[in-house]
Length: 173
Image (cartoon, one colour):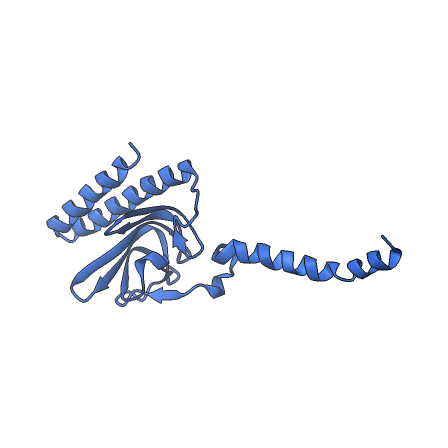
């Protein structure tokens, strides 16, 4: 190999490095995205802001839980609604309006895990402990929602969320 050939290749290294860096950043997806890149939503009643997992789909979504500085915080539930029809729900923990960990209850089953790539449990190979923690936290969130309804004297809804909490806990058995 001649020196001229080596020097010709050296001129392309910055391009190869840039392509490699771009590929790595692309593979990180939205998990590495800045909070400004997330799609923020707002509870129509309380005006509490949050980022909903994409598996909830778009539309009116309501937050039941604490709202600190205008953002969903702590354990609670994001519930999607279409008029009088209930949709998918996220039960879990929020921090500064962004989901951390929990479970999305879909008609076809559960998505459980940490929030990344804009959704819950979107990792191809989720850590088993992460999944266990997600169901545990989701059960706590469902109990919190049930307690809210019990305080409002809505016994049927309180009972529903207490039963759901038990079902979520059983997913780890």
